[in-house]
Length: 419
Length: 170
Image (tube, rainbow over all chains, first blue to last red; front, side, top):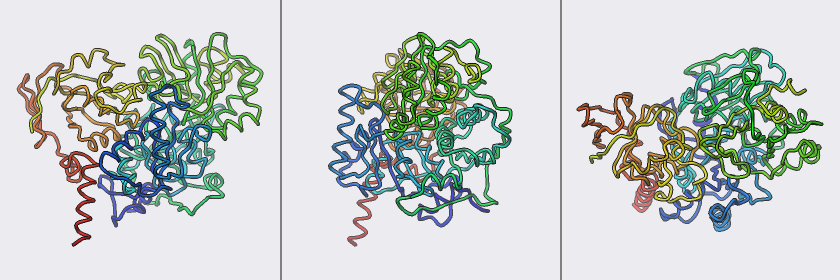
């Protein structure tokens, strides 16, 4: 019996000679990530246990991105804990405000993650990097503390579910629609403790940014990882690479616990309604949902192609009166690109605000919090009760195209309604 | 070791934003976090909880973010254990690593709000004293039991490191 790409990467990072789903193994990690929420707890655990030196200062990344630029004194203190630890341990990959971006957009952009790597992050959306053909997964702060000590982590080897996408994508349908549609089909625990391997002719044509979006939301189906086999699109993205990397692909006789096949020709732009990412409908079915706010950004959809799509729709238009449109580029590089390409000009003239990179409103942190009774459509990843502020507010999730169109209409809209 | 307390019932897919909202993640103190446990979905939950009480939930408990503040908040408000039909993967590992008691029970629906429960942790037996029912849960695999026995991941790591040093000395 052959192995899936995920199993092959795990095998390359453990002492075990063979592995199968359900086995407990110890793995060596190529990179361990923490942010301003999770790393302070990890640093405290590391110190409390009496350890004083990290295993490898080059294999740790600390990104203060959630409540930054610091929203209050307490979050400033959390950031200070990161900065002090980075200085004390001479951690190379610490990104201060000004260099910082949303971690899951920043690390691939900086080429800190490459195909074949094994990455853990104390952040559930660490599964994003699977788009590069690596195994990356979210863990807790104590896991991160342990990795600081010896660069290792315990895993239960997950089984793999294969998702094959065929057919022709309709206009305005993108990776975000595919992953929301998929979660709608299998549910928020449909891939519990599994790897979601995304494949098929539609995925082979998808650009890196959309692949990142799909892998990013694997956690919303309960998955340990999302993964796409590396191909020419992957290689274009990582070249020139700062170090050697390995390409893994699934064997032809690899074992999949289940194979799903979706004909994308039937999929229209999708919206996830409150309060679960699996509660999906087509945008065309949601005609009367009036909105107070639209957010375009996050580790799911704050990349340059996302902003370009929003710009295409918003060019020469105005945001609906009384609606707040918040656009957040995921990194400083994307911020600068958006300026150079004239996108910021389009956004500001449309009546949007254009913020500095931050997770901000996605998790109800700052910079766009909702009050009771307000409705927001966001390109983010979660629409749980109170996710973006008041427990009596409502969050809907969509692609950047649907978000931009809805900002113009003032209600949830299919992009064609405003063009 | 026996844990006992009253059951507090929750549904399916209780996520980590439900357990502790992100706005409170500016602290890593269990007691401080515990004050806001389940605030968004059951604002009076913390007032109802007596030390030792037990959360009983449906499937996929702890889904969503990786925040270890969630199991910390549960511990911090005085809850001694969580029983659920299934647990989300990151919550599962956080609970193991922190030494929070949690048990998977397919029949969790049979337990009612307010039922008096007692759990024998050493053998994974749950007694519903109100309904006079007994459930046997699956023990953790050996690898995880070892971490739990040591009192969490960092203690397990320390004991492993010390053992390694001794072996080297020998």
